[in-house]
Image 1 (cartoon, rainbow, N blue to C red):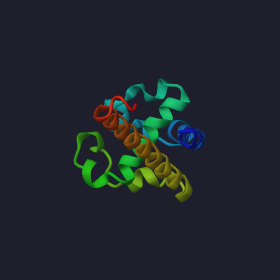
Image 2 (image 1 turned 135 degrees about the vertical axis):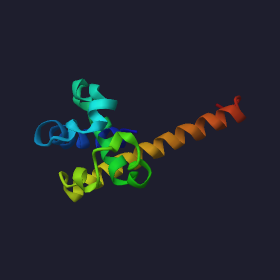
Image 3 (image 1 turned 180 degrees about the horizontal axis):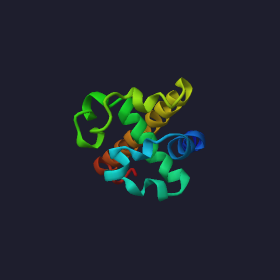
Image 4 (image 1 turned 30 degrees about the vertical axis):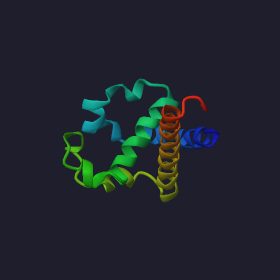
Length: 119
């Protein structure tokens, strides 16, 4: 869990600056129509939304490309070209670590449901 917070802080350092100042990625349909509040959140919380957007463009493109949230993006390279390979890898690591924590939480509550006297 501490590792996830550490990775989140590392991701926050570059992703907020890149989305809000260096690029026009906040002018896409995803941010204008579906999460317009992202730019007004504190950096730590908005970085999670930006990382989710980058992850959807990188890993989830076959699933999300036909959705209306990405109607103005023809290719995921439009988004990912603004980031270096190491930054994209860090965002992937961030997503994987949060997925692992989420799976552990689900397993904990399943075991708690099965054996309530042990937990």
